[in-house]
Image 1 (spheres, rainbow, N blue to C red):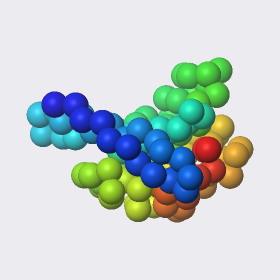
Image 2 (cartoon, rainbow, N blue to C red):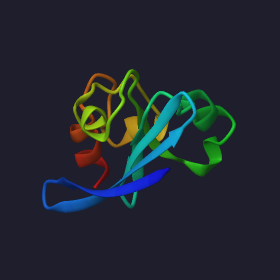
Image 3 (cartoon, rainbow, N blue to C red):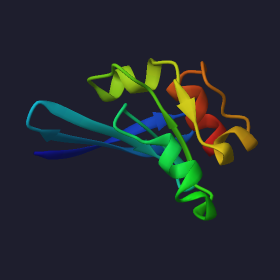
Amino acid sequence: MVTMEPIRVGDSVLIGVEVKLPKTTLLSISTSRGYIMCGALDIGLLNEVLGSRQIIAARAIGVRTLEQLLNAPMESVTKEAEAIGVLPGMSGYEALEKML
């Protein structure tokens, strides 16, 4: 099952997506510039194989809900995310603010 819900960050309303799969749930919250996602996101792939796309993204691990994703520390970030000030350790909410 796929669900979408509005997520308020500051004055912006973003899109939160939850995809329930067997034995796991994929989570993401996106802005027009980038996104944060659960541990299924492969930061290495985005930086190395897809580097020419300049993807702004960050990953949190161990999260099971969109609320947890917002509050969790980012475990890793793409080079492009780091270039705009998104750093490992900041919360999902803080990362999204930088992506607005």
